[in-house]
Length: 88
Image 1 (cartoon, rainbow, N blue to C red):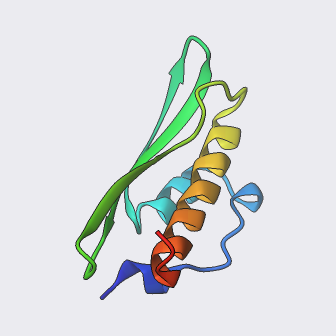
Image 2 (cartoon, rainbow, N blue to C red):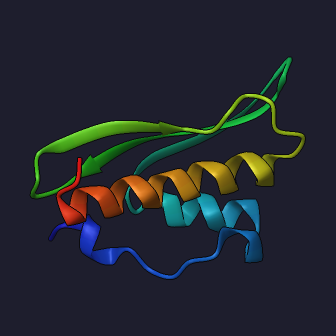
């Protein structure tokens, strides 16, 4: 089944970092890390049925893990919606 069809009204700011990472796992392999400049989140995305794979990243300068995950999740949903709409 195509994982784009599973885009839901998930609001990452209302969940724990763990819950957000589990939600992001539906679309690929999420990661979070701490660097000198701050927190960063990254996901390798695989769109089943469409033969598409790509990466989504947050900026490296987030003060909290939640902020990095929220930005990455928001960017992920925008990218998936663009694929779904055929605008990429």
